[in-house]
Length: 441
Ligand code: NAD
Image 1 (cartoon, rainbow, N blue to C red):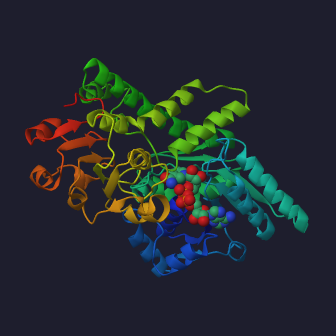
Image 2 (tube, rainbow, N blue to C red):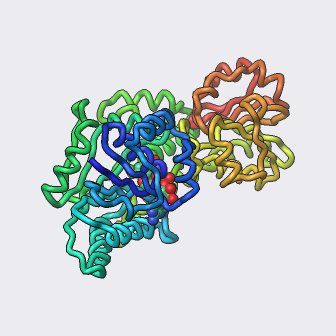
Image 3 (cartoon, helix red, strand yellow):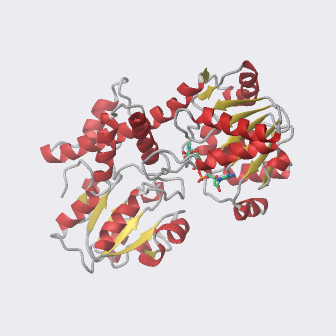
């Protein structure tokens, strides 16, 4: 079975590689020549646990190819996945330029029946636009080649992407023809040996499902963050409250951990895009407006605690920051809360030295440059620091050595943006402790 995956980023690379792992012949295509050249040398553009090994294995077996040439490889492909970026446009709507550019290229080069599957997160109506773009290009060629469009939103989590793809909770596919359904059913069957469902539906519902899923998850995070802030005011501890509510199966204990706000390449942009879609159809999604507002404020919550602790003046103070990526397990810095916190601190005249197990190169190259210092390990970042701020809950930060911190740091204060430290332990070691929604020192 020959498959093309267009766009070789987080989603496209994982999709292509995992499909090759089941024996399909996969061509991963990208317009970024450097990315493709590197992949052909075995250098991956992203950090994702376990991915390099499967990429290497399938490339060696000549089932996985990396190329910039879509048209030259489309002949005989049973499905073409579009997995390019859909960044937010200025008005918050998803920018479909990359998706439509790929659709046009498919229309210009298609040789026989294929299913064109949108895997990028795209608003309702996009599959129709993809079909129109392909048809227009076929029309220009005077070609009458059958094809189907389908929607197959991706639910993988960065940091666990390979596992999520290989053993998905569910696969959602929007289709309009039995022929397309059969192609995709065959392709995905090997991933459903665990009995989890392959859910077929119409294309509009499938496009909507992805946004509804991310909007629900973002809502859970903003809900618990808002309750955590209230806990602090009334003297409750969010950790108790979280456990108290999470044991109710109607609520569940996942995704109700308070913190410094959600980031990443999906939740912020998808919440915005859904609000925009609703607006386009004349509906006011009030709940998601609030979710977004709570999250934007939450990214400054730790700054406010820092300012309160230092009497409103951090000029000349040095802060150690542990964790830069928007969550553990990835080097993705898109919309990372660390960027907001660090921006606040630098803006107030403080200096920052950060440590992250994998995201420092990405942070330095594309986001923070030389505006902050980068440490070789977590304790080096703490040397001479007036305070330590935990931003990303990488496992290695969970049990800090307080004796070492005591020796290295100038001040003895911890700001725990993810509630991973034990407040009592920090205090026993002489550190002031500030968490989220917990009684502070
Ligand atoms: P990404 O930015 O990591 O990768 C996109 C790739 O597409 C880039 O390598 C870019 O060079 C390439 N590209 C752009 N235009 C192209 C063209 N015309 N032809 C070929 N390649 C082209 O993006 P991503 O994080 O993989 O996200 C892709 C889509 O999947 C987005 O819609 C996103 O919302 C969605 N999604 C992402 C995740 C995630 O965790 N990252 C999860 C689910 C869904």
